[in-house]
Image (tube, rainbow, N blue to C red; front, side, top):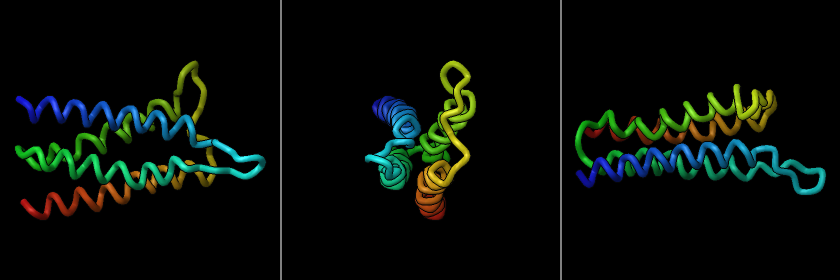
Length: 115
């Protein structure tokens, strides 16, 4: 029962992190782009996957935070609030997707290899 509650909290964290990372992606310091949320995605998405894997149960549940993170980026990024496109077609969007997905996929691969 506790593991399910923790998994729900991890999914909520993935949703909140994806939202924050997407909304603060166009952050600038003066005229210089400062996409600090890419670093946040690189650190947090593998952590969410590893934390979900430590809960026990089927190893496929470790992928749930990553899938939710990608789903939120897709829904909010392409058809954001009011129909706005928050995931712009530039280098920052590509780095956010790669920075969140690749380290989490590597962590998920390690989790799946252990089973």
